[in-house]
Length: 330
Image (cartoon, rainbow, N blue to C red; front, side, top):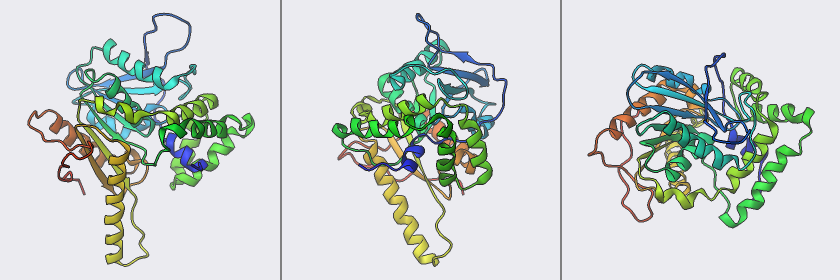
């Protein structure tokens, strides 16, 4: 599989963090001197179902702020930042496995009862890995996953090496200029791109490259059948071109939506309870493009999770699919 630098950037892309002077808690370490794999900020209500926000690669979790702030009145909020990003000290590999365990340790240390994991790109990957590795520790996953075809498992190690090398071999003084070019080619809004570039300067280059390789090499599909909780996956659908007639625009949009949903089911197979849904007229960063709609979907998902009689869809092969999710906010 030929890897484009833009594809690799999108695997780890994230945006706009806010605030400073965070009061951090960190994963408890029983031994050794290595820094913690995660740190987190606790916000919001003192009771209710906790929501844990997991970031994309390279960014602090606070770029979710426009989503979690409206939810903080009724839910405890945990905003996670990963080692090697947001100015936090890096850790050694395997980073992905250590981070999965660290999120589970946080849930245990904070005595959280079936929290909901909310993830974006790498955060979505982490959320499903946690739900598979610790199926009794979480209550559900709400996520915006990366929707890109992967190589067969036997070829992933080779692809992962190339992806990691494309970052690790960049000269130190060219690291940020290289990242800046990728960001500007992937983020249309210039103000958002500028803020993202500023935040990426707090990301450790070695962490970024090596963790990128770990994600690409991960045979994550093999563990998805262990997930017990309901998963809700959303695909942002970019606005259609204004330069085509309405009939063609509708036809194209319908085809694009169906293709995205089919791809999502293929990429995340064998999950017993899994809904997939589109979010129209938004782009890669819906927590910034349309935070009110993201909040709407989270609240609707939470209401369904709390009803034992809820019927969920599935990505199990040959299982009957549920009707498309209804009630999307305009």
